[in-house]
Length: 140
Ligand SMILES: Cc1cc2nc3c(=O)[nH]c(=O)nc-3n(C[C@H](O)[C@H](O)[C@H](O)COP(=O)(O)O)c2cc1C
Image 1 (cartoon, rainbow, N blue to C red):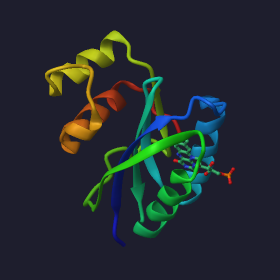
Image 2 (image 1 turned 180 degrees about the vertical axis):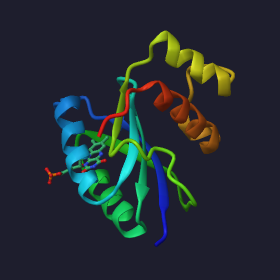
Image 3 (image 1 turned 90 degrees about the horizontal axis):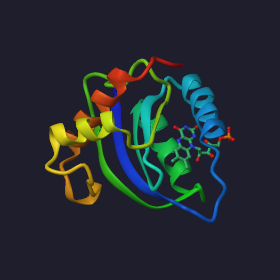
Image 4 (image 1 turned 120 degrees about the vertical axis):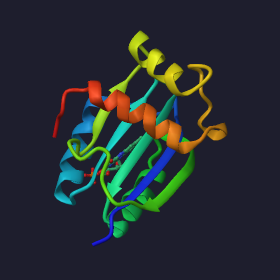
């Protein structure tokens, strides 16, 4: 069966309440049921998320997420068939904030740590997320 990876980013909607702990628990429960994996990076302003799994499941989830009022201005960065998962240990890993270590990882791949995802190469963003994930304790 095919394996698809989708990457998008969006802006947090400040007028909606956001409880990231509850959100990630929902993601992990739902995603595990469908063999979906990925990572969600939230810097306080923006979300950057990778979804991996079957084409139909990834597509359905992306459409559901895009209607969620907790974020807005969703931009699809890429969606392609892949040979292998990058985030196989996480039904959805959450990484929040921009600490010193995360800044260092950004600077490894970009000229600045203040990256506008609209203007950058999606492969470099995936490099950043993979390095972030290496430092995260594997969860569900
Ligand atoms: C930034 C963001 C990322 C999300 N990621 C996922 C996800 O990976 N999996 C998921 O099931 N729901 C995700 N959601 C939540 C969905 O939009 C939706 O609220 C949820 O799937 C509904 O699940 P429920 O019917 O079990 O309550 C995300 C929402 C936001 C705002």
